Image 1 (tube, rainbow, N blue to C red):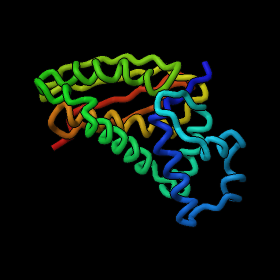
Image 2 (tube, rainbow, N blue to C red):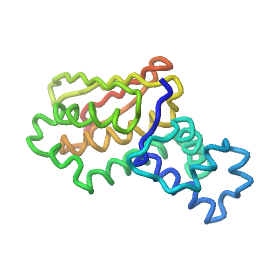
Image 3 (cartoon, helix red, strand yellow):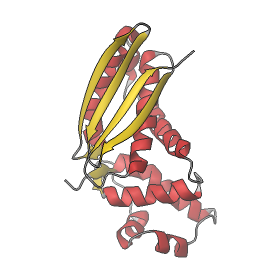
Image 4 (spheres, helix red, strand yellow):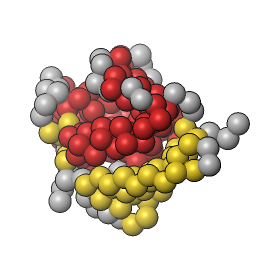
Length: 193
């Protein structure tokens, strides 16, 4: 299980790293110190949305953004995930989530279970829903390759938060945790009022 990330996911990371270079916030020398040769090559390629790219490169490129633009603030990564989800929502990918909001958890699961492995190769996603007095909570367990970067976990958390909040029609608090090198869990529940 070496993993991989779809071109649709790595494209914005590549675009943002290249933007930092164009803005003069990173030099080519900075990149050569921080990245591997394969990462530098991918920065110069045209990204094909349906192709698979190295999960290791994705992690290293995300780390550059995290350190330079995000100033090592995890919230920066979560926000990147929210923005990625918003781009997909705007494209109409998960319009069905807002239909029948009382069943939003089921719809979230129906979307994330196939979408997760379509973005991250060699992952397996499971969702468990629990009714609460006020709404519901969910737990998504994801089996990941051992080289799955923790930075990706935070971005995925933001993605799931945006999708769940849209589906529920109300803010959903989402957290994530790495339970083991090959397992992460993403938990969500209605935001405290």
